[in-house]
Image (tube, helix red, strand yellow):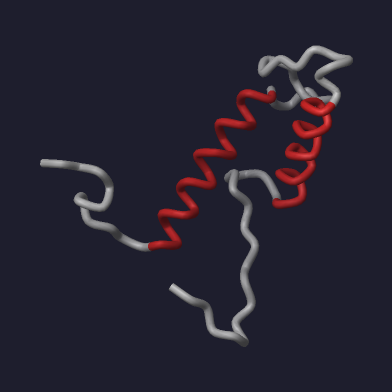
Length: 86
C-alpha cells in the first residue's frame, strides 16, 4: 500500500507506554553497549542506567511491538498468507 505524496507519516512508538524518544534512547544504549562489548561484557540481563528495564525485556518488547505495528499497518491477511497450511 503506497501513501499519497502529500500525506505525512505518523511516527508511533513500537512499545506501548513508552514514547518514541524513550525507545530511541534505549536503542542507542543497546547499540553503545554492543559496540563496547570487547571492553565490557554484554549481557542481556543487564539493566540500563535508569534501572527500569533489562536489555532482554526491552528487546522482546521492541521486536513484538514492531511486529504488531507491521501487521496492523498491512491490514487483515488470510491464514494462507500467515503460513497456516490447514
